[in-house]
Amino acid sequence: MRISRIAAAAGGVLIASALVLSGCASDTPDDNNGGGSASTGVVNVAWSEPENPLIPANTNEVNGGQILNNIFAGLVYYKADGSWDYDAAESIESDDYINWTIKLKADQKFSDGTPVTAESFVKAWQWAASNPDLLNQWWFIDAIAFKGGTYDGGDNTLALDVVDDTTFTVELASPRADFPIALGYTVFFPLPESFFDDPDAFGEAPIGNGPYKLAEDGWVHGESLALVPNDSYTGPRKAQNGGLNFKVYATLDAAYADLLSDNVDIVDSVPTSALGTFKDELGDRAVEQATAVFQSFTIQYGLEHFGDDEEGVLRREAISHAINRSEITDVIFQGTRTPAEDFTSPVIAGFDPASIEGSDVLKYDPELAKELWTQADAIAPWSGTFQLAYNADGGHQEWVDATVNSIKNALGIDAVGLPYPDFAGLRTEVNDRTIKAAFRSGWQFDFPSQANILGALYVTGAGSNDADFSNAEFDDLFRQGLASPTQEEQSKLFNQAQGILFQELPAIPLWYGAVTAGYSTLVDNVEFGWDSWPILYNITKSE
Image 1 (cartoon, rainbow, N blue to C red):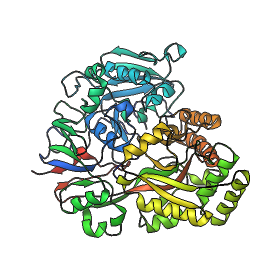
Image 2: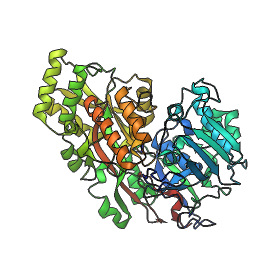
Image 3: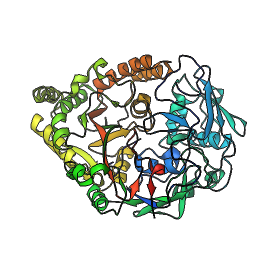
Image 4: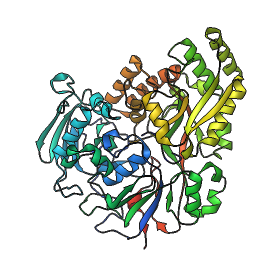
């Protein structure tokens, strides 16, 4: 899922050699998720406005995703350690990794009292596949087969069939061993019938089937969004508090100041200005742990001098070699980030940068950087200023300034940061392909598989492929990896595919993220997950 925070044996698979990425699909609910709420206090969460209205198939960034994950229940959900378990689903089974049968738990309801049925999933997925303007349409038309073998753009084009109220089948376009793991991602959430009457209105006041529902006061843009427990939810993620109040902050520093005075309970990213002090200031309420977050910046191929040609490759390589990642992570991030070695994450199964060809392009080498830049100048002389755009509401200025200064010093060119007031403004120009600068990018994993980031960011036509990167060999290796029945086989193919990314550099890898967060003195049972998100439904708070 696109980073945008204020900072910013697999169950059900019937094949003996099933791919095990992080599965443990038992029927046991999480601890403390019994019948009633364990506390009644409302938990205040630092937040910023989502990029788009809250529609699952059109949300691919953290702020919107965090809300959707709490008001919806997917077929599966992810525990703090990255393992998965069933939520709305009772079972997800296949004999060949292509044809899947999904059974739902009985008697589930949306927060408006209407039933959650197989049709709720099938109709939602068909709707998403029929709308090419959606950010996440590609997930469906890329992964699921088409009825009749051809995409017709209609609202019944995917090879999905409702068997009965609690059962539906899915035919994939090609084998995918990790399909159950992906099904906890936002895009695969169900939708109530009321959605189809007025999708725009729904996006402002969504109705879900998860542990929370939108409060009566709802969403006050620019200020807050309030959720209350959804009494009709019977799944394993029962709310243990009296609700969630997401408070909008313009800066991380403002949110952190409120944390120190207990005016906000959860800050999921400490500002860089406090990285050297937050452990002393918060004590055992300070959180620092490795997480599945990949940070990079992207240079679209339409930017002058950075096209899909020899000059563009030389300049991308030069830029990469010009960045002193170790110094930036030590000085700016106080050692809380780790220099990137690949395009995925060390906390995701299959991480093995030593096996990937070409990753030495991430090594800081100012002399080589200058030599490559000079070679590019011989093709077409450089003029102007290298700009790196970022959202000013995200706590990014320090690292962006350090990065462009490293580039400037190594290459002897003008290089500056280009601030945008907020994330939505930056992403609008990125999505419209009107941005005239490099821009911060990155990925917070939606599900614990390398397939998530490699597929979403670099497969031809993928919804989050900001560079419009397209390479047939990469696509083929990626799809072969998806079909692999073992982790070893999948990782080998994915890492071969990453070798192509290092040749082309559609994004410049920077570092891996970590949760550097904190919580107030008023809450207990705070835990952050593998994906850096706080497990909000488990937090307790007294009145």
